[in-house]
Image 1: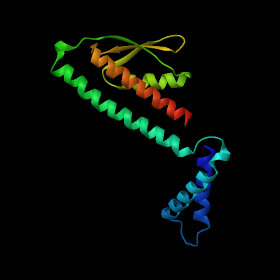
Image 2 (image 1 turned 180 degrees about the vertical axis):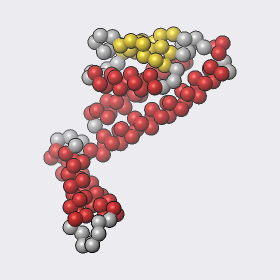
Image 3 (image 1 turned 90 degrees about the vertical axis):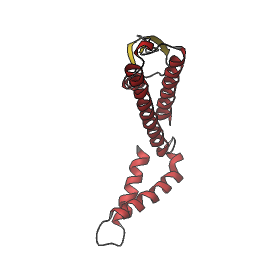
Image 4 (image 1 turned 90 degrees about the horizontal axis):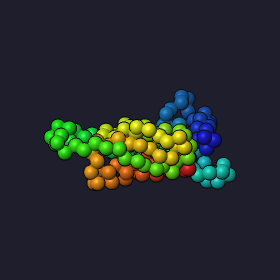
Length: 161
């Protein structure tokens, strides 16, 4: 947060000290880019990674979630509309490595928002998720567990970047 605020301050200073009669957004953008370079050069003194890494991780999580949302929507629609006899619902147990409660909550919300899967229960120690899956075949279980592991990896990347 300190890196971002310093970058914004540098951009405003660049805009204020410019030899212009009016404030232009393009001048602010130039100042922001110069601020990015300055903050990148001194980010090691702030203790942590450069703040754009976290924004990149958040963007990746957003993109992966939307891809999963679209593909699972088509898969769920296919099962419901064209192959209802092949639907074999069941419960899958997933053990998570996330430690903090809000991280488990975020993972739970991402799973619930993805069509075809619902988190039924979370164990008292926040380690086990009991997930109702629309189709309980081996292939579908592997895809579900792979997407949950991907969510978990991206959440860790957002938190620790």
